[in-house]
Length: 384
Image (cartoon, rainbow, N blue to C red; front, side, top):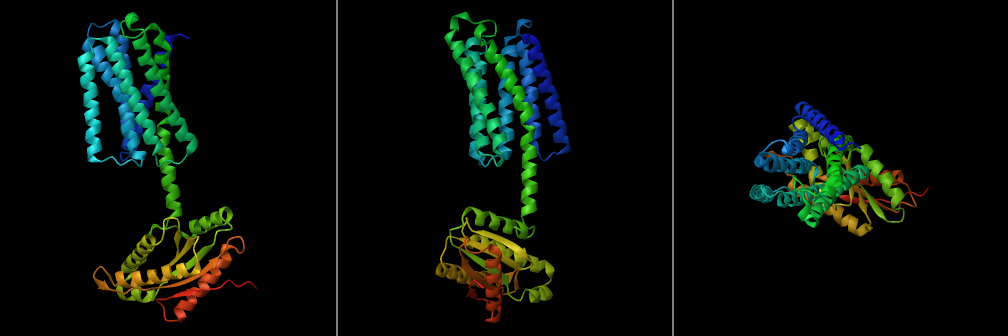
């Protein structure tokens, strides 16, 4: 293995990947991660190039301080790009702490660049910490593809481990450091660092593609007006629940806005859409996070209440009717006085399919309409 050739190929690959990422950013300016990751590639190539020039240029400030600052900025830009994919809340205070930590690292480099050994340890530890933070952010990622996220997380942790090994080697061989402030035994850790950086640059773009795939999947599963599950996704969730929890009792609930045609005819379809969305928001807030709710058509909703008895379900239904009547009297200062009617039925998945529950709850909803609306009716399963 010819080390200079391997290093040169790795740097060229990083340069090409950096240019590719920046072109992606130009096509999709909203995805700032591409720009940050392209900066990461360019910083790594520039920093590594300056390191190579240490044997030829008599400028410690340029080939040590500036070079190592660029090498640190490479994972820092990776970290900044990962924030876009994380559930981690990047508050103003946390941003200030991050900037403060980066400034502290640069000051440390500035004070130690004339001592290559000290600088090597400081750079290795800073890069190791940054890649550990990258792995942590990926652990909090919104991307749910386990094989990919675990692979990239492993790469980050391996990178951190390599840099820690390099720091240990420098300390252990303090009296035998070369011009770069590194022992001869660290050549393989340096090679691993370069190869892992290249692998990281190649893997990162997939995060954005997976995010786009996730966004398209969610869009296909959600009702555009209410953001609830659409009809198809709602019943897919029911299929899955019936398979996974056949013995846990559930309550199937059908919900309909009363006299909705009158609302549309009187106030217009725009306000009617707002009424549908307002009822959806209220229902979502009132039901539990593990309950399943969807808009199955027009002004009609369906919900599956998990592990609940009939009486509790009736109370929940009555509360929903009361909340809608009390809180949705006005929409955009127009007096609409919305109310809902509810039909519900309790069922054990192992005994009956969800289509039977749907039919029974729909019949109970019709009974609520016949009873004068703004009420709840408990239906029964027809076993015939």
